[in-house]
Length: 363
Image (cartoon, rainbow, N blue to C red; front, side, top):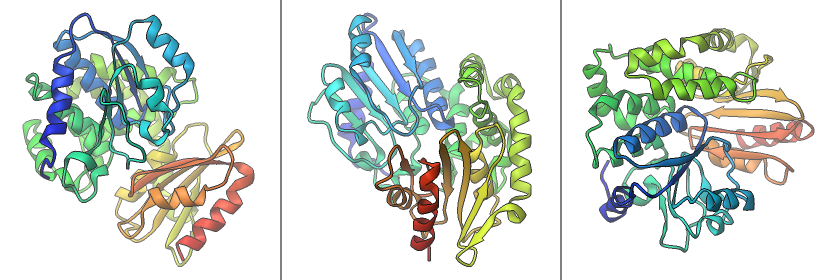
C-alpha cells in the first residue's frame, strides 16, 4: 500500500495537532468492533496530547443523520471540532450542512457518495489517499493508528490497532503489520486469526453489543477497553461477555445443517432465533471458517417489525452493491457496507421480496 495523497494525510495530522487546549471536540463513532477500537485509540491519544473531548456518542450504526438537535447541543457546549469514526457521514449530503461551521474530520473506509464543499470538512477515506485496490480493507482503527503515530509515541497501543484489523477482516492487506504485532505480543500466528487472543478480544467486543439491554453492556465494554492497560487486561475485563460467544459458536458449529441452501449452494441463509443480536458475529465466523469459500452467506434475525441482515461474501460478489440493490424502494430499509461484509434491515413484510431479489442476482 502506498500513500497517493500525502497532502491530504498531512492535512489531517496537522488539523489534529493544531487543536488547542481551549478547543472542545465531539466524537461520533460506530458501536461495532472497528468503531470502538478506533474510538478507544483516539481517546487515549487525544488525552495524551492534552486535547479536550466534550462529547462522545455511538448513537449511529450504518446510517448517519445529524439534526438541528445535534447542532444546538454542539453550539451550547462550545464545540469547535468534530471527528467521526467508521461512519458513512457523506452518504447523507445534508450532514455537511450541519457540519459547515465546525472543523470536521470524517475518518471512514466505506465507499464515498458525496463530497463536502466547505474546506473545513475533511473527508478522509482510503480511496482518496492510497492506491489500495480495495480501500475498505484499510479499517478506521488502522487509519487512526497511522495518523496519530505521527504526533506521539503509541507503541504501547498497537494491540488496539491489531484488534481493529482482525475485527473488520482486514487480514491479507496488512499481513506484515499483523505478523510483526503478533511477534511483539508473543502470540502464535494462525491461518484463522479469530482463533487467537486478539481474535478472542474482537469476539468479546461484538458480544457486548449483542445484549438487548439498551446499550448497557456495550457501554461497559467501551469503558473497559478504555481502562485496559494492555491486551491481557482487556481480555480479563471483557471476559464477562463470553456467554454470547457460546451462543454464536453453537450457530457456527451447526450452520451447515440449519442453513437454507439455494442456487446450488451459492446462497446460504441462516435464520437466528435468540434474544442476542448476533447476526454479524455469526456471519463473520462462518465466513472466516473457510468451510464455504464459494457461498454468499446471509444471516437474518427478526427484531420487532424488522428483519436484520448480515452478509459475507467471497471475492466474486460485492455485498455492498448487492444489498443496496435488494433493498431499493423498501420503506425504512437500508443495506450496504463493504464489498466482503455488509449489513442492513428490511421490514418483515418486505423480506420475501428481498429474498427473491437476492436469489435472482446470485443465479
